[in-house]
Image (cartoon, rainbow, N blue to C red; front, top):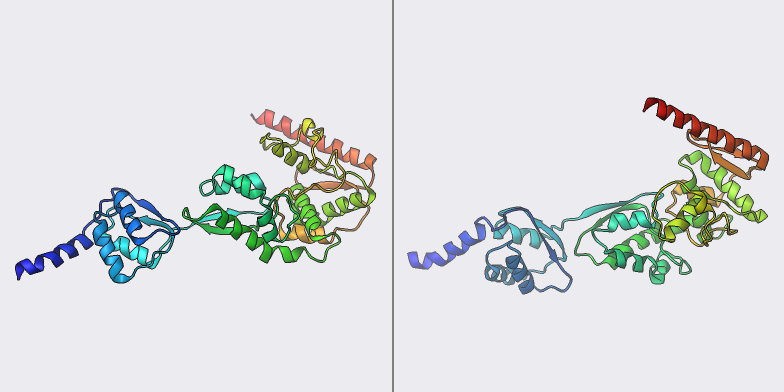
Length: 326
């Protein structure tokens, strides 16, 4: 009787004893992996001691593994490992894509899940742009919905991108209808306003200036587009525009090219989209930063030049103040 009891007792002890993991470990269950392959993987990666015992248990339970990223505590028993896999307790990472984010911010947020070269290939996918609702878009700039995405390392890059553009199609694409411009142009104009001001109350005034300039055939002269042209040219300095940026011949530089840029330059907020759909009325054709937050708007170039002088005076004052303190 003792001899007969030894095998089940040994099995129970093996099932409940502390596992071999010295520190917390992570295992990726890939798409299409079989139970036998996962059992061998768990043993090879030092999560469990016996792949054979895991296979016996899995077959007895008719286990169907859920693909994902699983995290196991140090010394997790075979029982604990099996329970987590059976329940599909996947470890997710929250990736926040905020308003005003552009391609390089999105790439930085996803760098641990999407290789850089794969990111830029998918970023220019016309199929994904069509899924977002704009098959004519040459890139996904502006077509990623601002949201928190739950991802894990077993996901394919295409899945992550698909989640972002499908969320855009559901939550953002419908809000672009009904404006003074076609939906994609509305999105572009909203992105310019989003990057020009941090004050929601200024957004309609900014889009109003740009809408009037578009009607008159004036160049938009939007500073953020010259920055965007710099980044597309391979210069990834994230600084204020320089004279060389304003003079760069590029399709995105609205100092030299008339009309809207070819794509949005960032993710606009709902307030920016609303302002782009309904630009503010008035005669203003110019605006410049105050240097203390917000902008001064002007109807004439002479008035605008006075505002520019005030801005430069304010920046000079702040520079002197820093030197005196420093």
